[in-house]
Image (tube, rainbow, N blue to C red; front, side):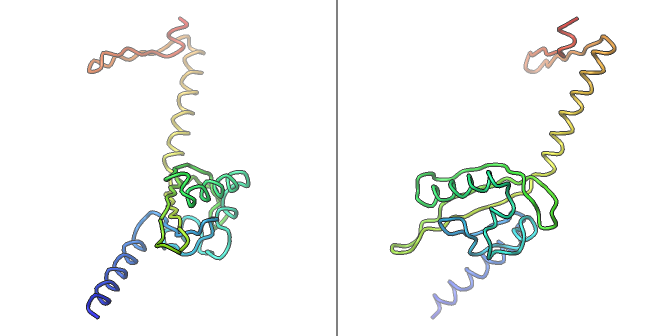
Length: 168
């Protein structure tokens, strides 16, 4: 009796930890259907766990690829995989997520499960896009002005310069 209570307390603690996390976590079957998920999953992907979540939130080609990869993980052909995707959020907005998938072997006689974790990486993508845009604007301005720039990293002993500087 005491061991049952101890196991139940540990299970409840784990449930509370998962629900308090910022990473969306879902337990899926071998074909990618969501069986259970945490609160962060609701916020990132949506609360409707009864539907094929990957098909509803990923672009069609991405959804098919992910379902195939999840099935390969479930069969043990891949130990895990990580990928980034554009997703359609609950309100219809588009965003970027990091998808981490791994296999959860089941006891003998039961079907293996797959753990799918989703992390919001919108901010990193926005920053990368802004940085790329700034580089393009700088290159255009340097070309127009006929100037360039260079940089010397003393610690690494590396010299670098802009394409415009090389052309001059």
